[in-house]
Image (cartoon, rainbow over all chains, first blue to last red; front, side, top):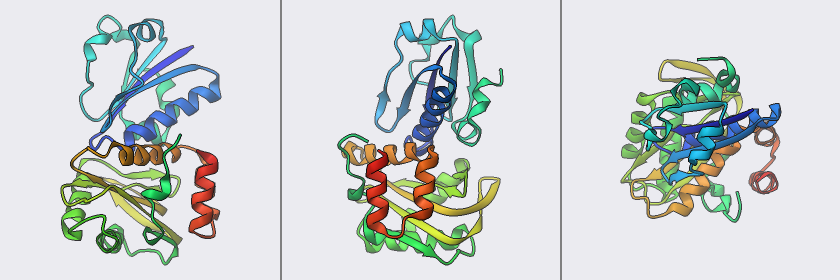
Length: 99
Length: 156
């Protein structure tokens, strides 16, 4: 299983990075491949490539503000789970609980 | 955390261990924003408090696990910094419609201009650490500032 995610939040510092870490941690515990792109105050970090998007079984958007370069995900909408960084931090399992 | 040094943004004068619980969030904000001003991180405690309150209006900064991470971004922040308070006992922290018992609070001051990416990176790394149980354990048991910083270095 391969999970990819994008995290973003209002200030671009706290929730973006906490949520990213929470997603990576739970995937590691479950033995899943995982890559998280952070869209925060430092710009885009660990940017997802088209190959990542194509190969992903699950795409998580954990965002409070708009996703930058969302057009990359065109055609993969059925794999996307929409949530909020705060929800992921409080209960990381939420990303596996379906759309 | 690579080569970033948390000690540069989490200064000893901004760490309060075993504080008496605050009456509420407002009380904690008053104390911490004053400290930020005294330590030279912000030029105006009141403006910085308004930035914290503005961020509260956008969504909860209560994170569960007795942790809250309020943060404010404004032009009155002269350099990015972190304050940490550990309370002897939890107090009720209300944040954007959520509330819970809190005893570990990280208060972040984020500058408006983002020239200083290095410090922002340290704040981001700190936020990431909060997702880890070992970090929360350390917050509960560190006996002084040095132990806290040493523990953070070991974990990062």
